[in-house]
Length: 232
Image (cartoon, rainbow, N blue to C red):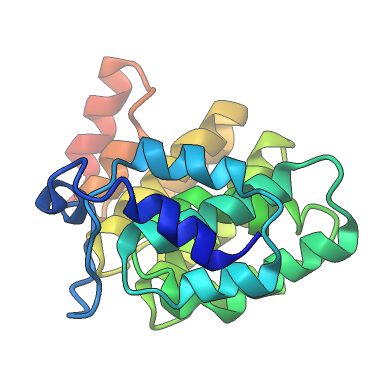
């Protein structure tokens, strides 16, 4: 399997969807990214067919200017990371490739597609210092990776990293980080409501409104109203 084979097959579906509809998901106007006009469902399906693509070839896909091709690269990595036959060495290589090429993952949906399995699941039994470094990055998408990756820990009932990273990011100036922090606080709260309430009692008055709304989404109406009245 070669990167060029994946690209060729994807380009055969070029213009199956309006490019502007694809690019509306792209929030980082880097002036370089373009779209082929391929539906993401098509991208994910083709990526699954290329699950065996070597990392060196995936890296070539990450260099591409087309949005869907880079999304395909992340999707292939995600499929590989979830595969039972993937070795620990291969998981480490996927983890390192994601981090080393984070500059090419310059949109929220690249992060949401890959961070949970490629980063979070890999770190389940390892030190998590990297996430705290990412949370303090000047790059918004690295900060999003930091919080999104903790979903792997939440699924295991390990909530401390989610709350600690949320505290680092609680007053972030990027709306898509605010939404991610609120979303994963909500998910952590499903596991331990008391911890979420403690966090909210500390931060509700000053945290961004959108973060607060996402975090309290599953509370009953009176409790939501109570916290919304506190929020700024």
